[in-house]
Length: 610
Image (cartoon, rainbow, N blue to C red; front, side, top):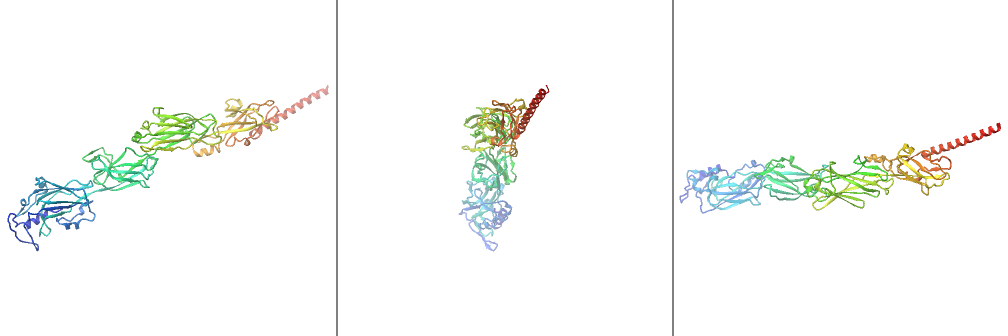
């Protein structure tokens, strides 16, 4: 910008003897040169403005002279600035201020109030930061900076100049004047960190579109695509100050994450380059209120629903990974799924389905659905249920989930006769949900299990022949077996004399994998007692219950003891736990024989005595 004091001094000295209305010229010494005092009123003037931006305009210390070579004094960190409008208007004729006794231009405040002579003119700097005013009538002009890019935090002050003006040496008139005004501008570098909502894990490959606005209402695209890196970070440099922005998510980090729909993330960069969010209103194209974002790093989350499956110790009991049941028992399961946190997502979500797929050995019994274990969902209102083969599906209305965090499905099955023996019987569930407006994604739960066992033994006579049709009952305790009450199940020997108690629970309920290792399919065991309740002709029932142990191998008849019947009064099981019973029965037989022999001997002695 041209210094007014310099201009005034030069013009005052050089034009003191000038007679504007005279038709002749006078020569005088100006330095070592000859000055032509007469202004050529037949000429037109021009004003060329080279607009620059700087983060600190205090570094621009060289005063302008109006000559083109002033450009050599531009600071190295200054860059050309496009899009800045300048408004100029002629406010006075030269003769009003150029007088024989000196020159005194109007002040900026005075010029601002003067009525324009002719039409005001506006020009905007081009891509090279240049605005040129040509064919200007000679006179006194008021120059004012108008609209410009939002990063301008400090406009240049309005100024007054004459066209023409003298060169720095005071030797000639400059009809083509050059000015190099500099704006103080501010830019901001921001970061966006993309994270998993539940785990806090950084997420790569999330994509956004960055939009900008000068008033916070009408936005246009600034950057079509920005993408998070392996550290979850997006870095955007040199955003203009005093402008509104918003991020529109266009692609989720991966398919399991829900694309944030109908939600944009607006922010504002103020004159100091500080990022703000959460303003309450907009006034004069600036936000009212709002919160400063620390370090200009905005954290944005993606979420994915989760599903977890457990087997329960009983109706709504303890959650675990494995249980054991007998055939015909109810097996209680629990499915838990998380609910997307954004109300806006649920309002546009089309699919939220929970499906349970059983395997052979399990039959669907019943189910109840709850939200946060407090509200019961209503069938045919909040959800519908359907079954196809071994899969039962609960199709839940997403809007019924608004305001809650979790869905609980209490799912009951029956362990049926097709259940595998001494084998984990898994039960799997899935959650299918809308991950975009047009597609869905499916995730699977863990596979909790149930297991059941079997005990087999062979019924045979003393000669090793199988005995068919002998009936036995199995009991949970020795006391129950002795009293013959509360039998768990009964079984009868087949043609080969084999007795099978199929589907007996063994081991324990396991909350953890460690407990399952100790008490599950492979290593668990449970003791029972059996009684013979009906035997074959010519045989007597066992006197005492026999203890058996159910485990992974007890369904193999070759690994359990046989139960032997003889034609003696006491039938004796042999082998394993029953061996003591057989020996005891044999002892009673020997004792009986001795008593008979003693009685016969006594009778013989009495006869001889007579």
